[in-house]
Image (cartoon, rainbow, N blue to C red; front, side, top):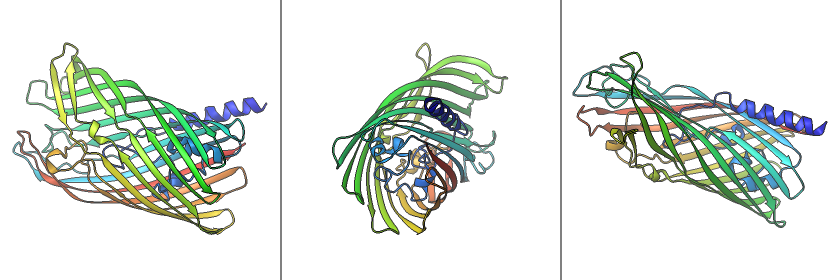
Length: 406
């Protein structure tokens, strides 16, 4: 009976992950951080050291050794960004409007408590996503009209406690990514669309060091994942007429996370995070036909980025915890010449808060909100359309999640 219950719970959790697995980037580049609403309340400070939720399976698998009992968790997040372009181009056209679409992102986690020192877990998440859309006749239509990147990753992990201070964890990742891009062209084919998908694989490791029951540090590394996209180029102006089979390489960046957590007393806890993302692996997106002829090229030349956050928890009564956080999120785009219309990235500043209710010893509910501020960022096209202007952007995020132990 217990085995059946575990299998049912895991299946249900994995099903939840498929609710809203696409999203709009709310971190540097087209990264999505919103795998946990509980951690969102702290702006993800201490993400690799908290080890108090099944979400640690993704952020640092070594943290599973601090969890007891079989557990599942699911999170659903609504991301509402705004990015409005103001400017003009040599080819004319209307304004871009709010270019970034609202979207939902889901994640799920399941942990099997094999023994006191050995744990197994699986995370099903969407760590990268992109949704931008402009009117077909807008001023930057020759750079992009619609863009969508969807990524789903399945990440099984194992954790083992070596001694009373040190725990380690590791996992492998299966990744599916789909890219769907359209733009106007000065050819008889008019509005063209490039669409392809791919599977890739990666790995991750983590460690957790407990100085005491109240103080710990965590480190975690997640590898790059190279995806060889295969798909088609079609003409939307000609009713979806197929122009060619295409292929391209898209590399998703690796990350390294350093986290700290300290419980001051029964009421207060503080935490911090520093995460490095290797966006420099994304030099360009080069699309070729199956015969090897170049079709399109998107120059990125992005830089590696850092994300720094500080957070605090306050237990205002038994079973009720408030979360607070602030963060600085460095943008992957260094100058206006590389700020494309598909990903109008810029630095971001986070403020967040959240609430956790421990309903009983087996059920926990979480609610969180974050607002991201972004300074006005310039965009200057190096193409012949002469697009010049700037973006004003902000993001609102609302997230809810549950944890169930059995």
